[in-house]
Length: 140
Image (cartoon, rainbow, N blue to C red):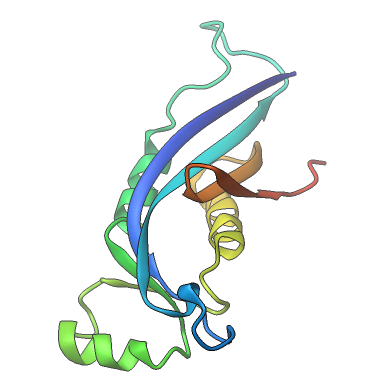
């Protein structure tokens, strides 16, 4: 078996609701996020390569997450941003749960299959260079 990892990055703001008063992550703030998608391969292809054609993942991250504001869909800021930017502006990424690194990693993980990647072993997301979270699902 082969393991291949590809790194991506994006810049985006978020905030986490329901934190204690004064918690820094409860304020709207931004990060230069790191993403690492880890693939498993049983074998390589006719060109003796384990993977090729990973560009759709980078395109997905840039189109859906880069320079966006990620908020829980019931965050009061949603209405204010819609009023300011326009509801169809595309500047918001609304999530059912808090846009924590854990939830962002899970969202990216489950977005891989519709992009044609059914061999993702894990997705790692970091807000800072020294810490990351990993969404890993059991492979069949």
